[in-house]
Amino acid sequence: MTASALIIDITLWGSVLILGFMAWQRGRVVLVSSVREGSMDFINIVPRIALGVIGSGYIAAVIPAEVITGWLGPDSGWFGVLTAVIAGAATPGGPVVGFSIGAVALKVGGGSPQVIAYVVAWALFAFQRMILWEIPFMPARFVWFRAAVSVPFPFLAAAIAMVIGKP
Amino acid sequence: MIVIGALVAVCAGLVWRRDGIDGVLKILTHDLWLFGEIMPRVLAGCLLGGFIAEILPHEKVSRALGPNSGLKGLLIGTAFGAILPGGPFTAYPVAAALLTVGADFGATIAMVVSWTLIGYGRAVAWELPILGTEFTLWRIVISLPIPVLAGWLGRFVFVRMYPKGEPS
Image (cartoon, rainbow over all chains, first blue to last red; front, side):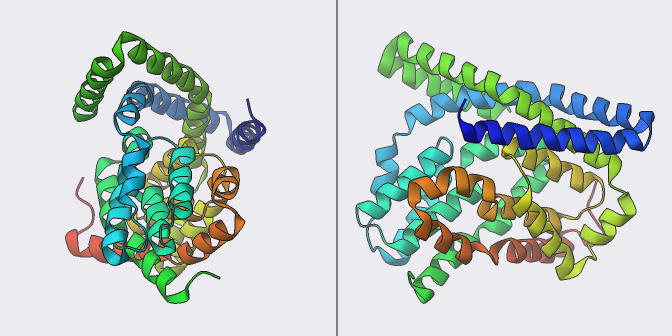
C-alpha cells in the first residue's frame, strides 16, 4: 500500500470516528440508527460496485489509450475542443490514465485549451466513474441532471484558457 | 444496471476473443483484488453518509444549502466539496446524504463538481506528479468559477423543469 493510500485511509476512518463520536454524544439511539443506515447502504451498494469494478476492467481493455490520444489533435481549435470533451468522457480507467493521456497530449503538441477541456471533461463526465460510483450512490435523476448542466463547462474552461493564455 | 451488465459482458467477450481465457482471467483477478481493496473505503463512505444524515439538523442544512440559499449556499457547497477528504467512495455517499437532509440540486451539484474539479485529494495525489505543478495550478484557477456556475445553472433549470418542487 502506498503512502497516499495510507493517508486517505487514515483521514477517511478518522472522519468516521469523529462523526461517530458526535453521533454517540447525541445518544445511543442516534449512533445505532446511523450505523444501521450506513450499513444498509453498504449492503445495497456492494453488488453494484462489484459489477462496476470487475466489469470496468473489461471495458477499459477494449478501449485502447492510443485511440484517445489520437483524438486530441494539436492546435485544432474548437473542433479540437469538442473532440477533447468527447475523449475525456470516453476515457476508461482511473486518474492515472486520464492525467497521463493529458500529459502525453501536451508532449505531442496538443493545444493547452484542448488539454484543459480534456481534463475538465474527464473530471466531469468520465463514464467509468459515473457508472461505478455516481449512479450507484446518487439518485439517477440527480446524476443525469448534474451531467446535463455540466456540459457547457469544459468549453467555458477552454475559452478562458484561450483568452488568458498560459502563464 | 442491466445495461452496464450487458456492456461488461460484451466487452469481456471481446477480450476473450482477442486474448483468450488468460486475458479474461488476468483482468478478473486484478479487478477482484482492487474490489477487495476498495470495500473497506466504501464501508467508511457509507458510514460517513449515515452519520451526516443523522447528525446534521435538517432545518439548518435546508437553510444553508436549500433552494433559497442563494449564492451563499452554492459557495458553501463548493467549499465543502473542495475540502472533503477521500475519493469517490466518500464524495458520492456524502452528497446523497446532503440531498436527503434538505440540500437542493444546485448546492449538491456545486459540491460534486467542486470535489471533482478543485478537490485537493486527486490534484495532489495524481495531477501534480503527472501533469506538473504549473499546468495543474493553471487548470485549477480556470476551474474555480465552474462549481458555482454549474450549481447556479442547475438551480435555474430545476425551478423551470419542476416549478412545484421535485416529483417523488
